[in-house]
Image (cartoon, rainbow, N blue to C red; front, side, top):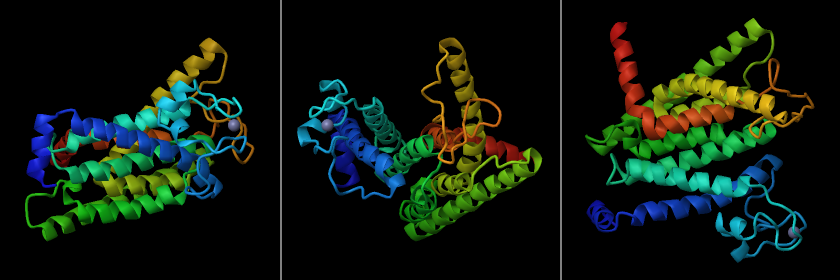
Length: 310
Ligand SMILES: [Zn+2]
């Protein structure tokens, strides 16, 4: 299908592609639930197929994103055990982000479907990394190192990802790839320095090496501006996050649903407050997604203004 027929279909049936994007996103979200559950345990994401905690396989009709969970009211048909509301939430979130990405970068939007597809891949990995980090306080290498390598390759293939789409493809491709590698190096380098300084000042590990690699991957997709924004935007998101979690704890007397698990894998208790070991990955991911979808030009203009000052 060429760009003209894309645009034509978009104009005649404005809901067609966004609806398709949502359905695709919901299905990808369903797959991400499997990834989030199995990858940290080093289990295959392909076999065995979806099965309940009791061992019964889940039938195709009971495995439809969002709808099956609602129809069964979050209970397994086989044994009645409850499935977390997180499953449909991840499916809904992925669907909505896919629509946002499509509307933003499709022919009706600003650039081209290549960025939309690259964005789907990037956002999917951010979602997987976020929930794995919340559960295990670790981001597997495939979503940090692996995502960084993929980001550089995608940048060569889709130069528009780094704003290069006006000249000869091979020139655009080279510039985009360089911007991606720059983003990877600047992002990971900056977090490494922050982590080293924080360790000297606080005399304990403040950021994990996983965060260093994760910001590198964000930079590979978003360029150095996006990586820098994600670090400071992530800190801001974290501040809001804790304000909400702290207020929730004070009012309800219960641990908040966004709080980390009571025990880290190493067995260190993590009450909220100073000394808590909290995952920074989800905050980085939220800031990166906001940058990728909505804030790129605004942040770019801000950095350009700043550059004039020096
Ligand atoms: Zn069951």
